[in-house]
Image (cartoon, rainbow over all chains, first blue to last red; front, side, top):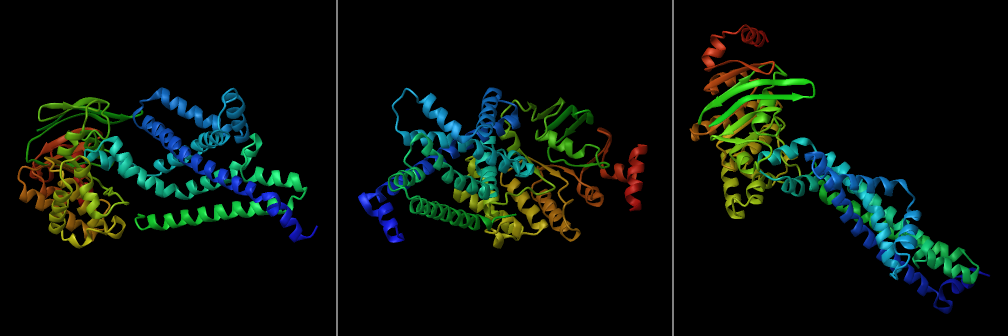
Length: 228
Length: 243
């Protein structure tokens, strides 16, 4: 089988490119949904833990938040995905892409929480005190003084987490989500030729992460002018 | 107008303040001096409740304040200037000054900008309104920080070693601003923790000497600096004079 033939068999014949397209769409949907969910969960968890450290209130919530991060970070994400799919949604008919978004979002949230917490802790204590001394509330200080500076400090780490997340979605294939990796697998199982499908999706993953990297470094530059 | 009663503060086993009693009247300019680690800064921070006192009480206009209360209004009236300025590095000079009055809904955007410009003009930094703090010198930063406090219309300002982090040639511009405040607003109460003895001596109307967490001597600058009674104070002053 020559290369042109192999390409034809893997991509063109029988509309097999549609698998790739479907895979790309699902990978993007899951990654995007999971990033949004992860940032929301992560921010809330980080806020709970910071507020607890600060005021010694919200003890129960803080315990739950800490347990959540420990459990998520202490177990493999494949296992988490399988538990959510086979056990939690085992008897419910639910869109498998939504399961993916939930699983990866919940997983990412734990890492995002730790990144944001590290960012908040990196801000000089004097910033909080200056806010209080002006009569601002904890909430006002966190949102207009601490978070903007913290996010700027952890942007590289957050970017890294998003890129990891994009690649992690490939384990969605494990529960049968037709994302990029599964798509290539489907094609290869029909042609018995792994070269083209695998190289093609590798290129697609690379392109996505390349664009993400560029976007993040552009944001860093934009935020950089106010560095102290 | 401000009263501290039997204030004690410990950090773990370390007793920093061992029962401070202090009454400060309206318009008084009080200097707090004492050796390093005597609790001067801690006292200021307790008055503002940035530190929670271990025991003791703080009264402002006859009303008692502690951490269980909403302190927003109290802190607006009792402003604070920090040794390290603590400007917000992600905000411009203008935004630093207008942030609190806007967030608290005290001034409209127009009013806040107008007021900030008035202050910036007074300290000759109007042309730096859109600069970020890292583009300013230490003296400029501290003056902006003082404006940030002034825009809240405080009745009391606590100065926590306002010139200690500055290069010597910049100390003058900050003390000049403090003099301006005193000269334009006779009702402004100020409490200043500082190592600048000369400044304390001719700026303050009253001086308190603190040592090992206690008020050792309390009097006019003349009494404290020229006729110290307590041995510890005499020793402290002689050490400073030999430097």
